[in-house]
Image 1 (cartoon, rainbow, N blue to C red):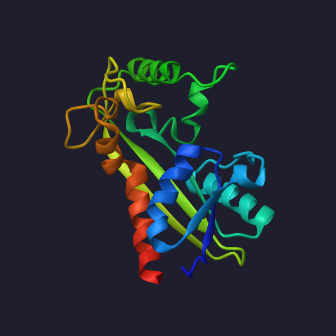
Image 2: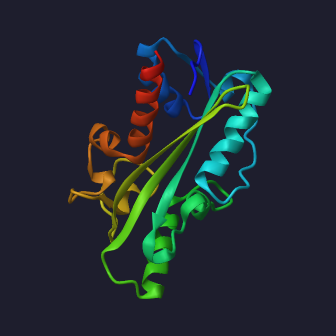
Length: 203
């Protein structure tokens, strides 16, 4: 780890993600920019690990701008499905007309039923952050939210697979929780807390 300077490129076009990182890093005097600010394309994610795909996104952003960059990759791992969908979490929702996570959740449930997997269907959300400097220095932060899957799905908030995921120590799905409660215990919150602690040590 080394000091970041005053500008960090968040390797995403997601405005919500940029806002989340900006709010967290503002007290440290770090201004966040996004791929959209520099009209950067989304690189193809060709790795079979979260850290590999996050590294692809970070490296592309650093190469294009010369700024330190932070990228993330995340997904759902289901134990009875040998860790699937994993890095293909979003791919399971692809329809050709955009993403349909209702379809993705049905696919996950159907796969569990087809395998005759006994409940509880243990699973975890995983988030990996890669922070990359122009000189090649790298820091990796991995967060997890362990839990189990339920069917039928429950709840209206959240996104992705949240309506079928109950985090450990709770009886509600992520989609049944207020967003603030979910964000406090999520896999991304875990990874972000580690990142913030590392940056505060450098400040």
